[in-house]
Image (cartoon, rainbow, N blue to C red; front, side, top):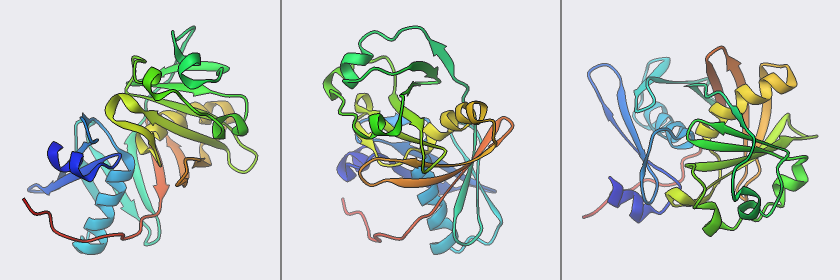
Length: 226
């Protein structure tokens, strides 16, 4: 699986298999296996619903992050994932040099770091030094701010695990949704990951879980040859 993910050279490659009742899923970057990936789970659910003809209302994936639930309304796919709570850090050595920018707040969020910036323009213009960023003690770095168009925007950088910038990162939203829900005092939000490819995300806080909604399109079908 790791060799296939390396050959694909995408942010993550997902692999799923049918179990007796549900599905088992794993995710790999070009260099390592990760514990959770949202957009690859969404893509897997699209395949199960639309190509394999799954007739149930909810897909249950067993994973390294516990049970993950996926549903669809026919147009959007909704990921039901566990939340990750942010813990503020006073300092993170080297982060300002690595990001070429100064965040207004820094948080530890599970295996990632969350950086809050003053505005969307700052987040959009970030130009990290990926060599320095790969030395930060975190799987990835989430950059986020409030937005005039959305409730919040974000970007995600993870050179340590072979992904300089991810286009849309579901696992990051398990950390962003509870944070921004508390700041904005609302449980339903609209967000955008403003990477070059961009992605609009519907967000909802459900107690100790989050609902992450987005769309999928069929891009390619084929067979892998060895």
